[in-house]
Length: 205
Image (cartoon, rainbow, N blue to C red; front, side, top):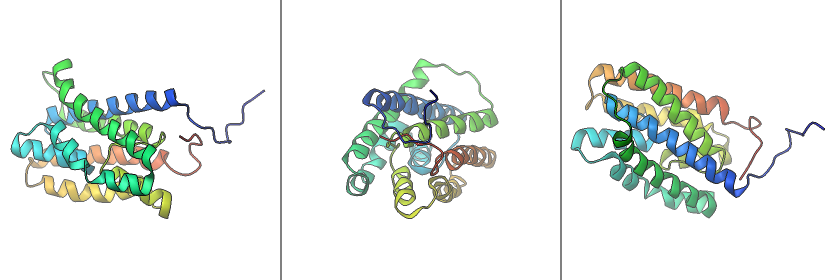
């Protein structure tokens, strides 16, 4: 008998755990590629990268600290399960993004490749987290809240916020790195906008 794929099915606990591990690994790997190529992205991750470039403070510490205020919105508006999974996801990304350069040695990477592949990896990772009621904090939390309560597409909202952060990058990064970063942000947000919308995926946590 063919299963009814249109009927929503609840994710099991181990499925949520697996999705969070895979999603955070993909996001952290994309951030590691961006860090090596001196690129940035949007949301709190992009802000943390810019702070790292400007001050030398490691990405993981900045990323973790920036996300702390957004946990209040996560608890009040999205519920404790979402908030707890997001806290775990942010902690994992913060840790792995710091460790990956020690695990994987990259002697050279073309900025365009890093932008497109890194943006794709982060987009797929965030999509995996979104579908299991988690996020990597910050603007992701606000984007999910707006989509679920007001019907505003998460990907398009993030694209607007990311544009503001990328404008700030002009004051810190060379012009070519900002252009590559914009291309990567487009890839990341298009993945979310095209795949994270009502009716596209029926599983839930």
